[in-house]
Image (spheres, rainbow, N blue to C red):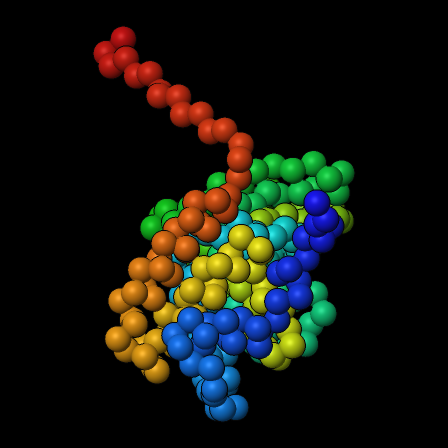
Length: 240
């Protein structure tokens, strides 16, 4: 039996193909240029809605930034349109998952992520030394990471190494591929069909929503790490 020998369907499934498939699912086979434009807009909105669904592991990335003596706050930008023209700036950052202090010998010391209340409780936020904790603030246009202690060593080559959640890229040109892995192609098409049914075929909204949620749930279940996790209770013996 002959087979194709390829596994590249998602890499040749462009934005205009996604839009065509979604329209066909709601029974629209003839549509205008404005219909294509509104479908692309809906696709971008859906990608933003996915960010509220939880962590997408294909968007987890790693980066390092050079620490500066006496500087405790470091900024990453949510959008490629924000920030400066600095070639070293990091864009498309949605959140920081974990971070380490990396010295000149490439030895990492894990940093503990703390909340705003814990950081506010520090009496002297300008204390310098080797950082041990970090506090993340998420603004409309940027993410800031505040280190404690403030880096104060004169040794060259010290970094903040961190894993961050990157935003899903915009759909962009109709000839682009979508910034999603192949596992999410079914729910992406189903989701766009649901969004378009709201505009063009309201009687199908409930049906399209059920299909979309089912497809998305399967994709989210499959997405993630296959490693095992172990939880061990901590023993505590009072008055001993």
